[in-house]
Each structure stands twice: as structure tokens, then as C-alpha cells.
Length: 147
Image 1 (cartoon, rainbow, N blue to C red):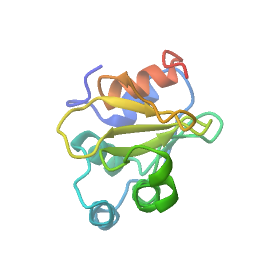
Image 2 (image 1 turned 30 degrees about the vertical axis):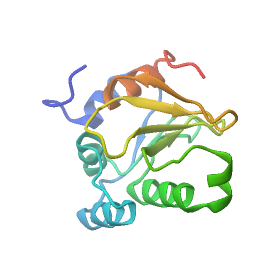
Image 3 (image 1 turned 90 degrees about the vertical axis):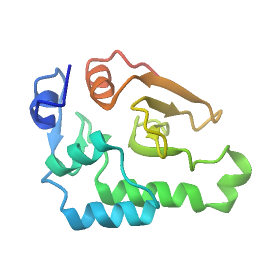
């Protein structure tokens, strides 16, 4: 599934599973998100958010969070002093979705690498789950990612 020449919403809508699209993110919300994070969003995620500022799954779970939620969740996790004593640093990760069980999906925040990882909130493991945002959406919606 190649996204470069295709509209994200069309790609996701063509997959099995339920996906509810939100209105596009404004440029100002993307700029605020980038400013709060202290780094740019990965290109694929930024393009997706320009088409749909978040995508909800069948049970209202966040397949892709809004730009505002991406900024607030990451800022909260990165700045929480208590979490810093319990877990490895969150700075290298850019959380963008939740699995509905406390685990979170992440891209690498400052490395130009498209891989998607899942952070397990119980054991602090960070496990590779997909080679790209497009494959994450495909595999998560079709049940190929199992947590």
C-alpha cells in the first residue's frame, strides 16, 4: 500500500474495519503541535493530519490522535517527573495513537525512519509493529497487529 500518490483518507477508507475521519487539522494547530513538541512531525503524519485531524476506530479508540492530543499527550508523558522514575525516557518517541488497553503507538520523534512501535505501559517495552504509518493502519485495522 503506497500512500505517496494516494489520499490518506481514501487509503484508510478502503481497508476493512471502521474508521471515522475528523475535519482536517488547521495549519495553526500543526504549528502549535510542532512548537509544543519541540520538533517537526514526521512527514506522513503531518500529511495525514492535514486530511483528517484524527481517525477513530470502531469503538471510538484513537487510530490516529488529533494534532492537539498528540502535542498534549507527548508533552505530558515527557514532562511527568514521576513517570521519569518509572520508565525509560519518552523523548525519542512520538506517540500518536492508543491501543485501547493503555499501550500507545509511536513513531520515532527525531530520526527520519518511518517505523511504528508500541509502548507497553506494564513493562515499558518498545516493540516494532509496522514499517510505516500506512502499514500500521492497514495491519491494525485488519487485526494483523496483536497486543
